[in-house]
Length: 216
Ligand code: ADP
Ligand code: ADP
Ligand code: ZN
Image 1 (cartoon, helix red, strand yellow):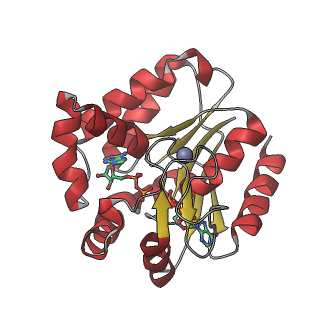
Image 2: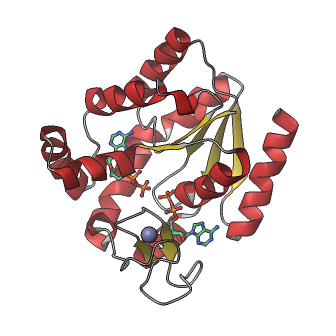
C-alpha cells in the first residue's frame, strides 16, 4: 500500500502515520523528520534547510525531491510506504510522479485531513515532540503517560521551535499558497480521499482504515 498523507501543519498526519506503520508494517517517509535529522547532524544540507524551517518557509524543492527519491529506492519501501509531509508543492508532486514511473510504483490513495484553522493553531500550540524517537504528543488530546516524558523511549519532550505562534502563522500561509493546490491535483487523478480531521484521533483513524479497506 503506497499512501500520501495530505493536510496542513497540525492536521494529524504524523499521528495517523504512527498507526498505519503498525497496522500495515510499512515505513513512514516524513520529510520534516528527515530534514530535522539533517539539521541535527549539521550536514551541509541541514545547514541550508535550517533557515527555511526556522522561518516556517519551505525548503527548496530540489533538496526534498532528492531526499525522497533516494529514500523510495530503499528495500523497505517494496511492501509500501506512507509519505507524510511530501509532496508540498506542485513541482514536488510532478517529481514524485516521474520517480514512481521510474521505480514502477504507484500511489494507491492520497488521504487529505481537513481541520479548521483555530483547531490547527491549538494543536500546534499543545504539540510536544520527542527529540530522540520523533514520537508526537499533545498536552490535552494525546498526553504521554508521564508528563514531559516520551512514553516510547523515556526522553524529555520538547516543543518544536517552529510550533511557536509567530512561525505557525507563516506556516499556515505557506500551506494555503503552495500545498493546498495539491488537493485538486490528486482529485483529478481520482485517488483523493477527504477525511474529517476534526474528529478524535481514534475516529480519524477508523475513517482512514475504512477508506483503505474499500480501496484495497
Ligand atoms: P501533522 O503531522 O499533520 O503536523 P500531528 O500528527 O503532529 O500533525 O498532530 C498535531 C498535534 O495535534 C499533535 O500534538 C497531536 O497529538 C494532536 N492531534 C493529532 N490528531 C488529533 C485529533 N484528531 N484531535 C486532537 N488532537 C490531535
Ligand atoms: P508539520 O508536521 O507540522 O506539517 P513538518 O515536520 O512536515 O511539519 O515540516 C517542518 C518543516 O520542514 C516545514 O515547515 C518545512 O520548512 C520543512 N519541510 C518538510 N517537508 C517539506 C517539503 N516536502 N518541502 C519543503 N519543505 C519541507
Ligand atoms: Zn521518544
